[in-house]
Structures are given as C-alpha cells and as structure tokens.
Amino acid sequence: MSQFIESIKVEDKEIFLLELHQKRINETFAHFGKQGSLDLEKIYKNLEHDEDGLYKLKITYDLEKEFRTQMIPYAISEINRICLVENNSYDYSFKFEDRKEFENMKQKAKADEIIIVKNNHITDTSYSNILFKKGRDWFTPTTYLLNGVMRQQLLKTKKIKEAVITLQDLKEYSHFQIINAMNDFDDMFIYPLSKITNLPDKIEFTKA
Image 1 (cartoon, rainbow, N blue to C red):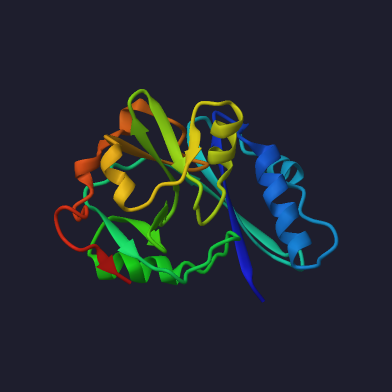
Image 2: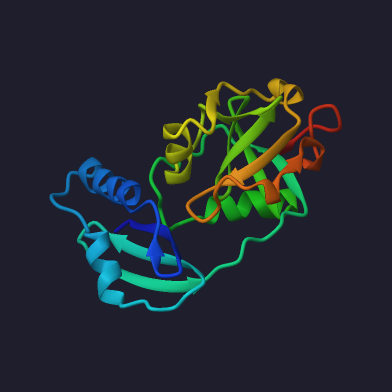
C-alpha cells in the first residue's frame, strides 16, 4: 500500500500551517476513495512535545490510517550545486514517501539539488517549490509538481505571484529561492540565477 508523508514545521512548541497540512491529508484520503482522515492537531498534542527550537514533525501514513511520527531537529542548509534536469513524465501530485525518482535525478545530475523541467516548463526542486525574482516581485511557476503549503500561504497573503515560467523565460529573472513547509520566504537564502550551473546559455541541461 502507498505510503505518504507530511512534514510540518514546529518551532518553540508552536505548529505552523496546520490547516493547510490537514487540508492536504484530507484531499489525499478523498482522492483515493477513503472515508475520514488523520487528525493532525490530535497527533501533535499526543506527542507532548515541550522542546524549544526548530523541529520537523514528519508523519508517515497510509490510507488505512496507520501512521508513525518523528520529531527531528531542523536546520536550513545552504545549496552549493544546483542543476536543471529534464523529466517530462514524472508525476508527484501527492506527497508520496517513495522519493527514489528524485534521488535518481539528483545522482545523475551530480548535484546537491535539482530544478525539474517538464515539457520545457519549470516545476519544483526535489523537495520544495521555487520562487524567481523579477524586479522587486517574486514569482512561482504555475507548473508545480506539488502545490506546497508554503506556496499556498504566500500566494494567499500576496507575498508572491504565479507565472508561467519556461526554460527560455529564466533569463528574465535575477534570483531564486526555495520554499516549503520548513523554509519560509527568507532574504537570508536568496541565490543569484547564475547559481544554476547549467543554464541554457551555458550547456544543455541534464536529462533524467
């Protein structure tokens, strides 16, 4: 049976974006024709987590409502080598635990992180949505693989905008940053577009 994961930010005993995480789990159960869902708030309360600091609450679950939890100390890491990778067939509409395809793409690219290009459109990195800066504004691709909770929150609060971003459009942007449940919009981790080692004006991007 398929396993799914949910990674939730917990900082100083406060749990973040719980409503959006709950919505995603509910939609997963509903999509696969299952009644009910998991109660994330109850799961967190039962953990009786009383430590300050930044943690990732990782919940692995299946459609029979069996689940296990891990509370993992978390630190945001800086990206050293990031590459564009083409994969026109990969589908990650739900947050599956099986991430072998992502790991295979990263290994082939010999990169710390990858930006997946699907049908000539920018999608996501292997573990996050991505933002691109044009002027003073930040844009996220409409062609995401997974509509992440932080992406939804930033769009809702109008901190970012959506845009169709093709491979050729990248030249219009100056910087990028990655976002997910653990990584908020953060001026500390903005990278110049030139950080991408195989932009089209340099070499052909890696094929998965």
